[in-house]
Image (cartoon, one colour):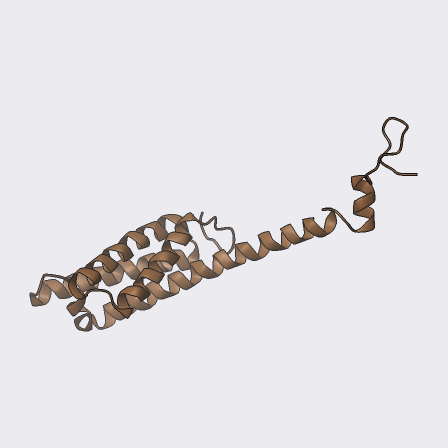
Length: 160
């Protein structure tokens, strides 16, 4: 007799308990899949955060160690030491944001600031040189920063 009896008459459909016991329906296997999906989603979010931080640290480091190589990317202004100072300030900002994102120190705020900075870079590069592979690469990094801004970070954080 069916387990789904309520009024004394057997029901046509098997009960949820019967389905779960038979391995059908959404019992433990679906719950395990959801738990696994939630787990790997958290780690993918963490990986994207770490990769974004690594890119920002990389470019920040290079702007600090060789600022003259980057002065050509500063739009409009073409006077020596002031441009170099702007590149150094930009390098420090990239480096600090990258470190904050890497180590999980307010990653959403740091990612938002990085997204604004990357938007400025994309607009500036597009205005001065048009669309190029360089601009499209930075659009990709901008997308990563926007995704990290909206993501809920739960792994490898020093401070939420």
